[in-house]
Amino acid sequence: MVLLKNLQPPTEGVRHEQAETTAVMDGQRLGCGTLYVAETRLLWFDGSGLGFSLEYPTIGLHAISRDVSAYPQEHLYVMVNGKLSDENEAEMAEKAADDEDEDGSDDGEDDDEGTITEIRFVPSDKASLESMFSAMCECQALHPDPEDDDSDNDFEGEEYDVEEAAAEHGHSDIPSFYTCDEGLSALTQEGQATLERLEGMLAQSVAQQYHMAGVRTEETKADFEDGMEVDAAAMEAGQFEDADVEH
Amino acid sequence: MESEGAESSVPAPVEVFSSIRERTIAENSMVVLLQGLQGEVTTVDLRNESTARGRVISVDAFMNIRLADVLYRDRRDQLTRLQDLFVTGRNVRYVHIPDHVDIMKTIQNQLSKIHRVRNFASEGGGRKEFPKKTK
Image: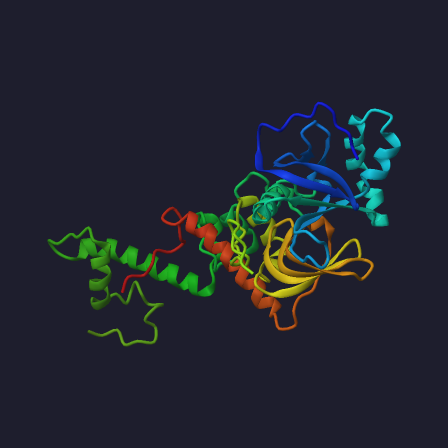
């Protein structure tokens, strides 16, 4: 057992505190104390300040066990990568504070061997197991694996720009915004045709302002509708190619 | 067996899109497939040679997996039932995809969920290339 003297309860970031909790490490009952599920680490110690703490990156899994045939009491099961007890028993004569660091740094080697430490936290209040479990889940999520090569750190803290990415990957179906220069090349054939038609309508409506005597409308939309009926063959030759331009 | 804890013993699948960073990580890796397994019963092989079989409650971008109603088999083939289990991504070796799961469809569904979340946030401010046609 790791002896941590003068251990103070954490004052910040305690997601869950559970008193009257017995800790059992690799089958050895350590006594009854208080479990603190804090954002920085998991702490357990009895009233006299003796206890241990666990760093979340060292915790492989945790679970609620209600199967009394497997273990006589309902408890929170925590599997820690690496060994806590063996090293510390050998070093109890030396500074106990150093053990914390060693527990964390031995992860790599011990993982390969599969050495684990099994800890069971048995609260007197069985109904609190869900809260203890959830609090640990939350805190665990705060400590993602720094060795994970898959996580793409390029986007950390920055908004992933959908528009930029879409322009890069040419996903024209994702609603996105293009500047005039970029956009033209990203248009599909249909898009090109639509653009030409709209530009044609626009140009035509400007022309209409001069053709329609005495009437000068600002509404381009209205002009579109009128423009379709008036002879616009010269402007819209491409669009109405297959139609009789006759009114 | 209903417990009297704050949560029910059979929680509904949880959407885990809690941050921009997680969304981006998920979108760019196969974790989206695992996130689409919420509600499915599957087996997770752990790095320490043990396995856990249960219903997937949630998978986050770091591949931390939460399972419910778990049958846990340790390295010595000892079976234990666990009500809830949380395994850190680092300790996951394999996640078995159930045979009936359509992998492509699952991935596409998850990606569209991510896009919906992202576009919802920019609704009104999002700009489209062409104005909507009014007919």
